[in-house]
Length: 467
Image (cartoon, rainbow, N blue to C red; front, side, top):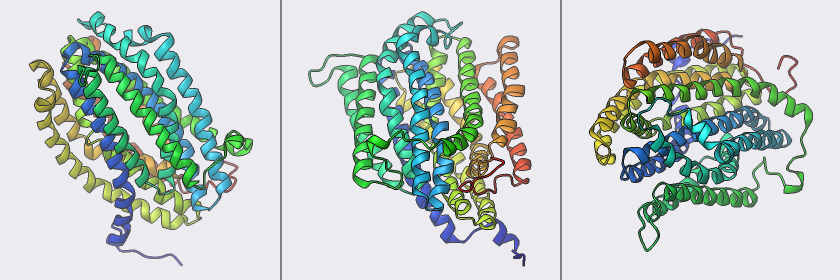
């Protein structure tokens, strides 16, 4: 017998459901907010050195961003299975998902180390081609990047453990650890950048050292909790790489397309930033970069809703409750609309921080930053809804939606348009960005059409011949 639901019951869940979403998403968003504050504090302190040093730090940040997306897409791929194995109470499956994250993440880390230590000048050069202050910016950027290479391993381990904890609903401890790392980073920034408490004045190198020490402290805390709590995915060191080939291949099949889609976005975003940087000197680089630093304060919404969606739907799908998962999908999408509207207002308010936090930047850089923050806030409804759509698809292992609708539109539409605007128009960086992001509306519509096919409604804990 098919259950009949009213419009309200179909699209609006009970208060208990939204409380569940809130208690999963909020600690994750707070953790991301704290990490965003670390970036903001870094930029605030470095901005006191001027436009050029800040520009050097921020083009390195774009490389770190690509590495973070790479590792993040790997943890998301393993996380799809982690959540469903958790729903099925399959501890061995959870351990295999953890091994997958660590193994493939190691490959990403090696690539990051090559970029940081073997060819930093070559990589960073592409970020400032055509910029009026390119040589000066590169001098600071190379100094910063060589030190930041030491962040690769601790960042990988922290991301693998923290993501696994969140995927089984343990969302508070990663928050507490992030608070501690933030305090360490902030204090060391104050000491090392400007030479307080008798320390040498190290400038951008001081900022890099502070970040590495904070990441090492974060990793140490996660490893301590990992061994003390022995979560269901816990693996003793001698058995850490005892991989089940069949499960590994199943996760890898899903992950290849997810990684390709996410990296298409990350690399196209980096190319876009490089093209923006041709529109002037250090004022453009620092102005655009500072706007994204501020925007990170409201971009925290994405990780929270992604985690909540993955945990809630992954658990239902892994337990075989497919019809219940379909209903909760609608409830999550409705919540995304209202939450996106709220985050738009919050994002607009953060524009007031620009002239306060970045008071030492040039007037031109501050003007660019404020316009960008306002424009980024306007897209929050679209982006929040898109993120929930993507998380729904991935919760059931439907990876083709991201490949066709996301990466496909990026490659066919966004990238050619981006080069056309850069090479054939005199538009400034903010109007260029606005035009590029209109493609996200097209992505949202294509996601909505794709989700009606319900390819995501799948229990991945059982062997699927079509997976």
